[in-house]
Length: 200
Image (tube, rainbow, N blue to C red):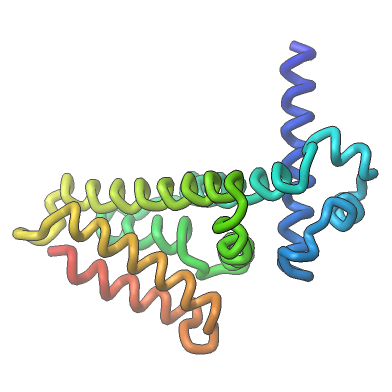
């Protein structure tokens, strides 16, 4: 029992440190997320931080992995609508797209990591896992639409899944880079229009 408590405390401290990484990235940029600056932000010593993360790469990889965990946590907290098409919109708007302050913070951190994944294998692995989880969520959403009978006849489910996945990914990036052009209300309009084309 004591070991379980210790493991939970260890994991909680790692998460607290990773959240400090997010704050540093949002405020100062990824290039400034040094071990020293993160330790200061988290209120721990350098030695204490290295007890939880032996390298900066390990620290950043863990922080990137938390993006996906946050996505699923937000979806679990939803009070989902009965209508399958509305349910699909809720899941995608809350889980993936930056329509609120928290989602925007999460996706901003994710976007900051994208340049680094090309040169750091550990980050590339985490990024691939995040993209795979996103693709699986989109596939599940469209699978639910198909099972409910609300998906339009004659559609290629695999094709539409890939199309929606790329649409959501592009919409996320564009809304972060040009928020004045694609504010949250525009994100909602564009997604609902896309889903309306898929639903009966």
